[in-house]
Image (cartoon, rainbow, N blue to C red; front, side, top):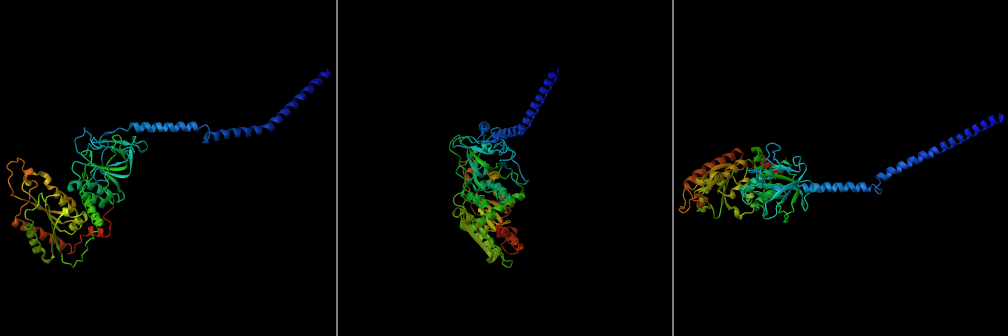
Length: 467
């Protein structure tokens, strides 16, 4: 029995010894195990983010998904007619997907892209020759296939009239000039995109209008011609769209826009502001702006004689009468001539647009052939409207009551529209005497100099009202 007991005790001691040895071994190996686990986890972390790791497959998948999304966005771009047939009012059917706004109040209604209204999308236009123009909105990273991205700012204009006509062209330019001045003259257009009834105008504007646009914005008027390929649109990095011309412009902003263009044109042409001393006797500067052909005077010498005599009677030796033809003058010569004019006398016509360059409160006298008063309608008064907007004084009109008959024409205007203008010496003398006397009185009240207050001081400072 004792032997059995001793044997059992020995086995217990051996078992305990083995357990102690194993425990000591486990304790010694535990740090190595922890170290191995840490190394494994670190290796997995490095593998997940390493560019050379197998997760390149994930990156490739994500890139493929991005490309697929861009392709889907690109394919979703829908071109719509630039002239929406569902809209009837002018100014509503052009880029009809977006509303134009006056911001701030008093500015002409416009659309700026990209913007929140366009969800950050750019304006794209497809206008190949001989087809109807179309437009779409697209994100910059998902432009239509074959699109040409036009960098910088684009001025987009739509109107129902001719950009080569000085009056109509000026009506299109005014809102852009106002917007440009409001930007502090920092928003300089890289190009202009011109539309007439929704069709792209590739021939550009008149030389006079292009010169004025360059003077006002500081950049040459480069006109977008669009890619020739039917499926290749032009997309504009930035664009401002005016589709209602001057609609929305307050009177104050209108006056400011005309004053801004006047100042910029004088600065561009190097026409220095005439800041004469108050002791100088006031001169009366009269310009007779003649035309050739349509609506020319029948007897220019007689017209010059009548107005010259009344000028001398009103101002004595201070009278200065100039005669010129706008068609024979460069843009800057027209700016210089009209900048030195107090009273402009001319037949109805595009050359009257040069009143823009006269000092504010200067006078305009307008003459018409027979037929205009009877049949021309409201359009014959456009230069009255312009005089009001530009801060000039329209001193009335004279309609020639005489002219050759048109027995074979039922439309008296088409017959007489471009006839020459006669003369009524007695009426011209009375009319001129009244206008010249009032002009002299205004100049005396201004102090006798040729400066027109704050306007000329801004020109002298080369500021021109950029706000």
